[in-house]
Length: 446
Image 1 (tube, helix red, strand yellow):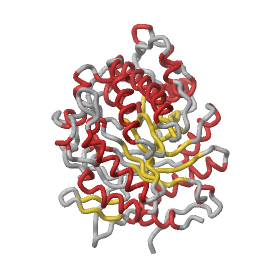
Image 2 (cartoon, helix red, strand yellow):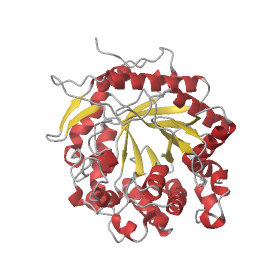
Image 3 (cartoon, helix red, strand yellow):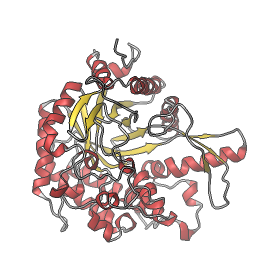
């Protein structure tokens, strides 16, 4: 008997109004690097030691060549929607004009998705900044936000009314903190001031992008995708609880609060002026645009306690078992608690779970991948979403990360998140048992 992903029969997630999908991003799957500008990830991948297996995104899943087959997989899965990102370096030239060859790829993809009755959820920025802009300062440079607005304006005009939903950015925290503060993602810069400047300019770009979307795609569902890692105190001590609150502000609310309320949390406001992000007058109003939806990416939780070093705000603990293959704790309850607490704290627009999934140590045996651990992960997290909905949180959809195994950033090709197994030697795709379970769940809807 194959294991199923199980939801209560009465779940609102089984209504046809609820959107089920799966997701990818451009740099992680496309390949075909020779037909686009260089991105910060191309350069970062050449840095010795930056990527676990010394790999890069030059070929990845060869999606640019194999996109028709990949759409067939989406059709087979029976998803309502497909979330993917547009490669800024593929659709623009260095002089800020459209690259028609790149644009026509996405138009073709969108037309085939629409024909298949699959709603396109498009992310405008999923980490692949053109390298020539990084050379000028990247997200440390205020002008980059205006360059993003120009790109957003041109590409959304070109795509017309084909797109069901746009997200300006995917996970600003990762771009700013991982990319500019601790340097484990592209462009690999390190410094607290860098992280704060990058965060502010990305948020500014989001606000400018929302203004563009309202003008060019008024009928689309427009918003942003934020990642949340719920923070739990390691003990009941006041010191640990305070440190945990600081961690939550630094990792989660730093991005959420300005987008929703037009202000930075205390952890930023309390900084000395010389340490604050470079905020100009009017910025916070630009950042705080009304959203049609909020995308939430969720994978795991973390524990915190009082800092060991005076200059730190908190001490982050190692993940606890049970863990996925990437070393992240499996704790679905945190997703329910996150959704309920965000809904209490903010006046939320409709929420979509835009990424959720697990890297597992998959092996193909007799043409099958028996990933019961991943099926269990999905069951736990889908039920957490269901419970949040029963508590009154308005969730419009859920996207499994990812459609297929792909280039997992600094982990290279070693960590597999896909519903579909990819043999990177041959590019052969194999439905894992989790894909079949997802397919059965989607087919069972009334």
